[in-house]
Image (cartoon, one colour):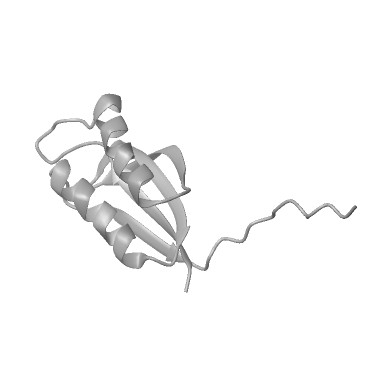
Amino acid sequence: MKQTYQMYFGRNTPTGEYVTDELWDGFREVLGMTFTGYTIQDVEGAWKGQTEDTKLVTVTTKYRDKVNDVCQTYVNTFNQDAVGLLVSEPMTFVTKKAEVF
């Protein structure tokens, strides 16, 4: 069953480093190889009392394991404590109606 997943990727690291735009763009390739469609938003979050720039990625898929793999890849690549993950009912889509001739 499809679900909508919102993944919160914080850009600060526990060692005080920052996931730069260049590093993020490299990671974004993982998203493109994993999902055929997704939305990325720049948001502000907080972790352990510290505010930080955050990338919010939303995807609707039936492949929970792929979502978990993407989150784990980010954790491992950027030495993160965690990636926030919100799971909700699947997003619905409004599509173009077929034209009748």
